Length: 240
Image (cartoon, rainbow, N blue to C red; front, top):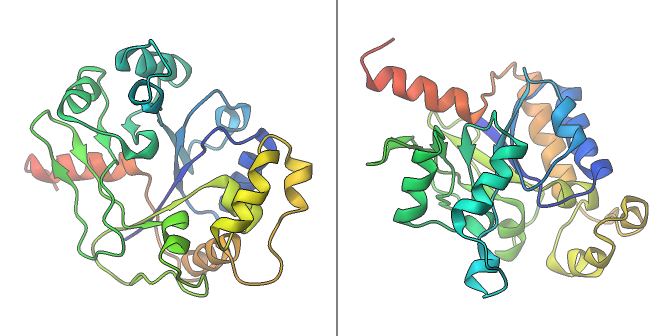
């Protein structure tokens, strides 16, 4: 089963809208993990999209914040009270954080990354959270030095194939770290970012479009992560 996720990572509204428009055009579902208030996420089609939280605990680790982890989670949950899932920025996790996510009544966590591994399945953690791993990420793909001509994933895998795309890399059609490093000083200026869009080789945007087209033309049913978590719990509890 092919699943799409996206960490919005403080992207400007035009960049987020660009990603949403691609998924809407192909009628493919996506789970967004949000760092901040976004009008585009607020008004998006809830049949296709869900919004989880993407809290950033790094400032605590770096000694740049006096906030507690719970304060950071509360702030983003106030923006997205409907959120059922969490993926921390930088995938930061701990036993204490997992318990806090459960205490906040979140349904699932998507912090476990297994690059290119097959056979992914949800599991239930000791806190009651459903853990849904993922196995592909755009910046990791180029970190390995892989071409975007192919995702390297078996799209016919009966188990989960969970992609993580970032709106900024979709917008830039990023193919390597050098393009992103050059462009990111204009991170909040969508018009300026367009000047850095990759049109020379196959990149992140091209690969996403090919995957979305594959799903549409093969009439594949895609899922939001909350749907997967709920279906898993139903089966685990003896449902059908």
